[in-house]
Image (cartoon, rainbow, N blue to C red):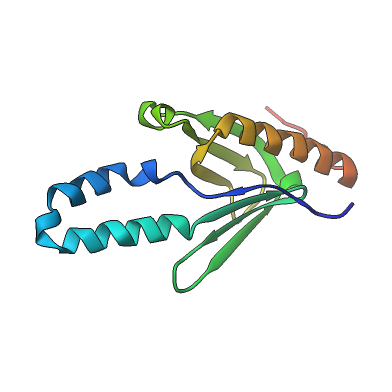
Length: 139
C-alpha cells in the first residue's frame, strides 16, 4: 500500500499566549516585539505530519530536523486538553511507543485533537494488520 498523508498541521499559537501577553505588555521596549515574532516563526516551523505508515515531526527555523516514528510501534495514545487549550479548541496528543530512541512524543496544541488522535489510532491498527505485528503486554 502506498503511503499517503492523513493529517498535516502545526501547533496552535495558543501555545505561546503567555509570551505574547508579556510581549504586548512590554512592547515599548521594542525587544519583546522581536521575541514574539521569533516565537511565532518557531511555532510555524514545527510541522506534524501523520501518514498511513508513520508520524513525522519537523522542527527548526534555520536548520531543519525531522523525527519519524513508525505507526506499528505506537503502544498507546492519550488526549490531554488543558483548560486554556480547550477554550481555543486545541489539545495535546501524547503517544507512548515501543521505540527505543523515541519512547514517547507529544503533539502539542493541536486543533481538533480528538479527531486527529482517532486518525492515529485507526492508522496504527491498519499498519499493524498490514505488517502482521501483534503487541503483547506482560505484567
